[in-house]
Amino acid sequence: MNDITDDSFDSWDDSNEGDRIATAELILLLRRQGIRDARVLSALERVPRRLFLSANSHTLAYADRALPIECGQTISAPSIVALMTEALEIEPTHRVLEIGTGSGYQAAVLSKLAEHVDTMERYRTLMELAEQRMATLGITNVNFHLGDGFEGLPEKAPFDRIIVTAAAPELPQTLAGQLVGGGIMVVPVGPSGGIQELIKVRRRGSRLEETALCSVRFVPMVPGVASRL
Image 1 (tube, one colour):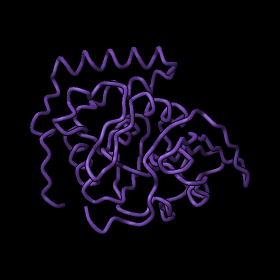
Image 2 (image 1 turned 135 degrees about the vertical axis):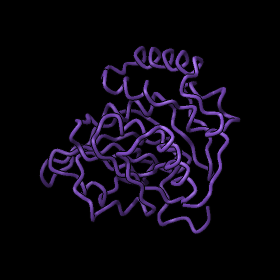
Image 3 (image 1 turned 120 degrees about the vertical axis):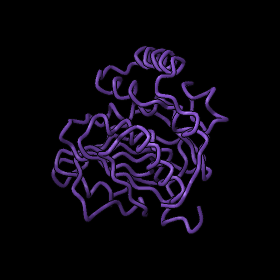
Image 4 (image 1 turned 60 degrees about the vertical axis):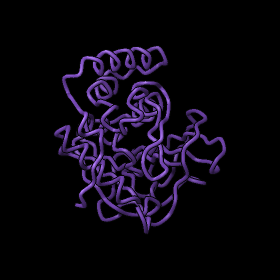
């Protein structure tokens, strides 16, 4: 692994009282917004969002808003992370695939709910920073893959659950094909820079059932692996 430094690691303190208070307030907000799954709320409560941000964003770490991260990407608002995670209906024995590691925050939340998580990222820098954050938190059930998210991980398929954290221009059929029967995928679908729909997809044999959850705005999925960063 390349030697990557990030000031968020240097400033991390898992006994920080401010983090605990801000996290508790965030969980109350998510409850008011309709998140009901106690396991999802507990997972979010146990993952310190501040660790997944650079120091200049720490004051906004527990605000319910998306924030910029490295490589021109974003970390989703906690309410969106909670909504997407709840929609996945994860059971402890599930194998989960995440497309778009980003900061690693979503993968860390997933790690509290499922025994095994695979996460894919096209930017090596983001992948390696996320690996360091997982190590800081002692998370060992997340495997990282540098690759093209449109292709998924056919060599490890099928997956019980798939979550996509960037907007696909249309429903990604290749990823849907990597679901088990009865499996669920949650993915934002729509144009880059415009309003997209968050779609919950359930595989029923050869058929896909689609349910629109809400309107969202995500960075676009980009094919291939970044040649820089």
